[in-house]
Image (cartoon, rainbow, N blue to C red; front, top):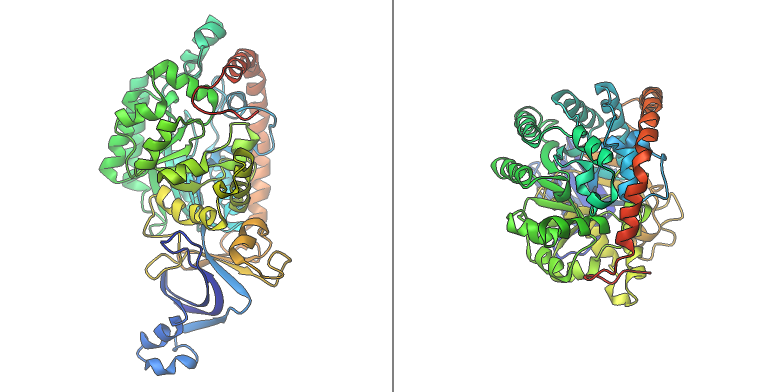
Length: 520
C-alpha cells in the first residue's frame, strides 16, 4: 500500500543534528518511507510508470493521497530507556532516593514473580502509554529480576507484537547481592541484614549460566519477531550490581549477535562511591579497562562523572541516555549535558520506568531535558537547544536501540515510523512561530492524531487500532490489585532494612565530592 501525504509540515531530523522543518510531501510505500520533500509527489507518479510531468495531478492509481494541510509529521520518538516491570507500581512512591526506592519497587528479599498473564498485560499497558504519546520505539530493560524466564520474556514480546510498537527488549541480570552494592556496607548493615541479602542471590556462576542460556534462547526464538520490529538486547543491570565475569559474558553475547549492550551507569552518588570502593577507580575507568565502551553499548543515566569520565565517554562510540524526569523524582542529580555533548558523546533520551517517572510520555522527557540544564549552568549558551533535544529523542535513540539506519528520521529508505500532529487542533501551535520549539516547550500530546509504525496506523485519535484498550485496562487493574496486595507485605518487611541504607545515603551526601561541584 502506498500513501502520499501532501502539503504537510515535515520535521525530517537530518544528519546535521537539526530538526529541519520543511513544507512538502511524504510518500510511504508499505513499511518504508519512499520519498520526502517537495518532489515526493513526482516520485509517486514516476515510480508507478507515469510521466513525471503528471505530478500536478492526483497520485497514480494504487496510491492513497492524504491532504495534510495543517498537519505536521515528525519521526516517531524513541524511548531509549524504560522498564515495563514498573507499570504495576505507578504512583506507589515519592520522596525516596534511588537506593531506598528500590527496596520498594525491586525488593531484594521475599519478593515474588508476576504471572505470565500479568507480565503480558503490564507490557501491553506500557506500550499503549508510549504509543499514545508519539513513541514508536522503546528499549525495555524489562527488570524481571531475578525471575526472568523464557515464558515471562515471551509474554513481553507477545505484548509488544500485539501492540504494534517497535521494541528492543532486554534480558536483565545481576549477580551481586543488594548489600554488596552499597558503599560502607560492612560498617552500616547488621551481619544479619548482609547475610539475608546474600542468601537471596543465587550463586554467581549459576546466574551467569542461566542468563547466557536464556539469551541464546531469546536470540533464536524472539529476536526479529513482528516483521523485524522486535529485537533482543543484553542488559547486565549495572557494574556495581554485576561481577566482571557477568559483564564480560554479556559483552560476548552482544558481540556474537551484534546486539545492544545496555547498562545503568553512575545514577547516584552512592554508586560513584561504590565504584571507588570496589575498583579503586571510577566505574567508567573500569568499564574502559574491560573494553565495554564500544558502539553497541548504551549507558543509562551517567550523572556522577568525573572530568576524565566525560572525556572517555565523549571519545567512545557508546551512547549515553539521559533520563531527566526520573533523575529529578529520585533526586539523583543533574545530567552533564553540555560537557558530554562538547566532548563528542552521542546522547539519547529515556523516560525510565512508570514507578520513577511516573509515565512513558517522551514529550515530558523532551521538555524536562531542555529546561533542566538552566539549573546546572548559569550560561545560556550551555543549555541544549530544541534541535539538540529532539535529535536525542529520535536519532540518538535510534543509535541506543541498535536501529541507527532504521528509524529516527524522515528519510527515504527508513522504516515508516512517524507521528501526525494536527497543528490546528489545540493551542500548542497557535500561532505557529517555530515548530521545533513549540514541539519541545508547548506540545503535551494533545495535538497527536495518528501514530504509524512500520507503515501501519497503530493509533488514531488517541486509541489503539489493534487492541481493545478498555478490556485490557480492566483486566490489568484486577490482576495488578491482586499482585500488589502481596507486594505490600514484602515492602513492609524490607523497610526494616531502610535505616542502614539511609545512613549510607546520608554519609555520601555529606562527603565533599572531589570530582564534581555538587549543587546546594
